[in-house]
Every structure is written in C-alpha cells, then in structure tokens.
Image 1 (tube, one colour):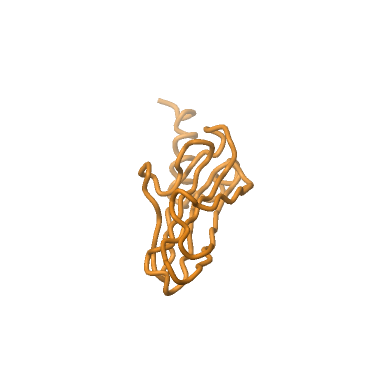
Image 2 (spheres, helix red, strand yellow; image 1 turned 90 degrees about the vertical axis):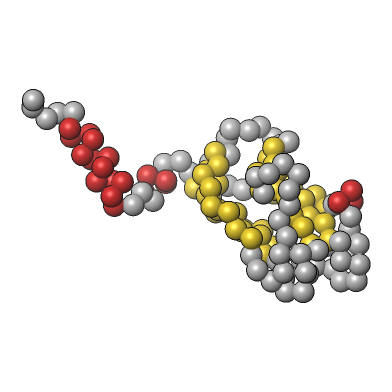
Length: 129
C-alpha cells in the first residue's frame, strides 16, 4: 500500500477464504514499517481481527497471529481486509495468511487425550450398573 494512506483512505481487499472454521490468522509485517502499516479483518460488519472493535494489528518485521475457532458461517457478508499505512515516506506490503478447515476436519485435529475421553464417554453409556 502506498505511503501516507490514512485510516479514512484505507485500502479494502476483498478475500474469499475457503472452509467453515477459521483457526488461525497471521498478518506478516515487513521489517522497517515501524508499526505504521496497519490491518483489520472483517466479515460483513463484524471485526474478526483484532477482536477489539476499532483496534488494528501493527508490527515491525514480526507477524501478528491469533489462534481461534471462528465459525465463518455465523455472520453473513463478505470478507474484507483493510490496510493503511501512516508512513509518510515508504510504501509497505503486508501478507495475510488464514488457516481454515471444514467442520468435520476439526475432529481429526483432536489431541489423543480428547479422543480417548470421547470414546470413554461413549462406551460408559453401555456399561452395566
């Protein structure tokens, strides 16, 4: 995004993530942007990242990440990534990485203890008293 892009003139990028559940968001900020390049991710009118309404992600050479289980079907509307750059000299390019899964795939990602508890609970229903 170009230098001197104010919040009022933020760049909107329409995105189309696949999957049904968003499990990780990563915004990669290049070195040298000194937290002057900023980012917000919305679905419809709901701010997904960062979670605090009106907040923004910013960094300098470090990714900003969030691990979550966001049901992408709970809100209607398209996905929009807003970026702006308060640096008055240099343009900066950010990278957005989203990790998504279909709901059925999350069962595969359960840790072994959770799976064992699931089976114990299931078979406990058939236990003779």
